[in-house]
Amino acid sequence: MRGVLTLSIGVRVSPEPGAIELLRRYNVALNYAINRILSLDLLDLRSIGRVHNALYRELREWFDLPSRVAIDCYRDALAKAWRNNPRKGRRPRVKKLSMLLHQGSGYRVKEGYVEIIGGVKLKIIGWNRRYNSYENGEARLVYREGKMMLWISKKIPKLQPHQPRDAIAVDINERKIVYGDHVINKESDRGIDRGYRWKKLAEDLQKKYSFTRYPAWRRRKAILNRIRSYHRKARDILEDWARKTSLEIVMMAKKLRYAVAREDLKGLINSLRKIKNKDHRMRLIIMGYARLGR
Image (cartoon, rainbow, N blue to C red):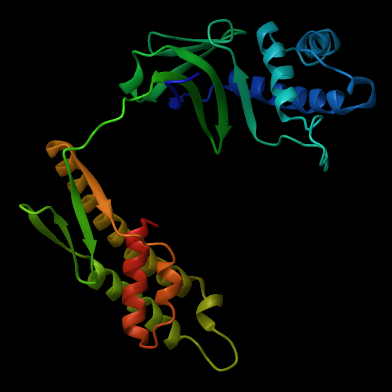
């Protein structure tokens, strides 16, 4: 549909045993439905009605799925099967526990709970209510690593094109970032030196525990964890700096109704690797990753 954007809103819900059991039955039924659709006697299926006649009763009776869940199951299987794909590989097999749910007859959000057909009631733990005014669409219930999420699709009107009054130019240098226009000129010091300090500590530790025969730091868990923590610290410093600075620029552009103009950074990392000075090259590569927001 033109002029409409589709978003997926995550709702954290309580992992109730009834929901986990339903997800497991759905997973088995989904893999069965995929194999049945791809089998020889069902390759001539051309409509959802024939799929319904072939699979609905089996999914309901053999796997004890609620009526609407059985319908969503074979719809999900049709989407995952490659029966119309000319480059057929191995038959798809779904391993992750997830379930397609139809809004209204499959699930409902009501008074801080998510009610799923079959008598399953999940308590809402966390929810981004920014898009509550828009109607809920189909959803997918996902259970992974002890956490359960309900991803609800919503359709919102597409924003109208905005004509900016002017542009904010962003110049990214080795030591600082300068942004503004012909009147405004602001500078933001980079976190390269702080990030480089932790990167250097990690490399020094690797050199200290690297012998001629083998790198001991890879086999000693305590040393390896310390090196990883140094790399993580350097990455966190750069990410924190990049997020804060980009937010400042965006907030200024939004306040002034300006666009943001940035230099082309394509191929930056590969070109920086060719610099011969190792220390200078490392600083620039760290800066390059911060530029690209990695």
